[in-house]
Image 1 (cartoon, rainbow, N blue to C red):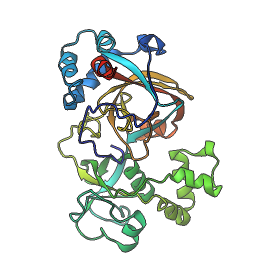
Image 2: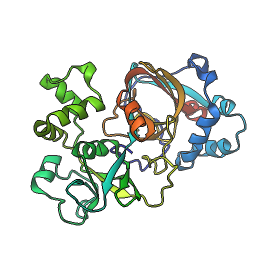
Image 3: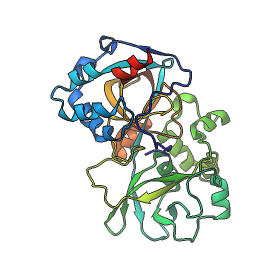
Image 4: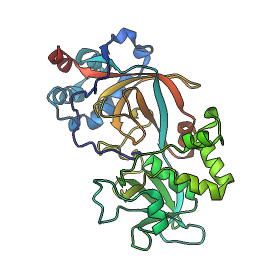
Length: 334
């Protein structure tokens, strides 16, 4: 999901990179008692078997047999605040777009597979070079053709999608690789140019600006040199979420994309999100994102389709995120 970072080691010890960390009490988590811990536990067990570190592996077996989810978390974990709040929460989703298996006058914007000469390691060509030189064009790498260049660009930001083909079929696409150029924010560039104020920036606002200014707008998208390649997911059931950084489906409003330098992939994370739609709930760190950097930075998965996209695109909220770490791991560090 998203423009995913490599996550070869799951359940690593918390790499705090010098960030301050302190243990807090479950009593210090507003809304903890009211959350649906059973739902959170079910999402945790979706990926806990991938966490190989010694302190995590035994917890997975216990989680599968747990009958009291809240007691399970309170008995075997301790909440740890890493870094300095306020956190920054944004949202992401799985787009549902119209497309075609072949190019037509309407469907003229390709979604590409990874080229065979690039193994996903190191830095490949930037977005503007790829597009100016036509490095991918006409090589049979087109997985689908879309009818909107703006949606094609934002599909790369989300890192996955469902394409409703003109023949009636549905194609599920997942992240395959990225060119490993740094992600540059289009919203930040619009602010720098004076085209938007900070409070106006959202996914919807950026799309509207690009469409209203088609020539400069398409050039603006090239400000982000990062480019994402996709792969077909023919065996992914329709009711399942897209594939996250741990290689399993993510779950609506229970999966967080995090920076694995600070938050172990697979770990439970207590989220306290402010803003217009406050949300306090136990999430699971099952994804990553190119723009998700820092101990107090996370992306909330909002689901699939246009309503999820509308909700995710409005989120840019402060708050606090607290990782639940195994008691054994914390005791070993004493």
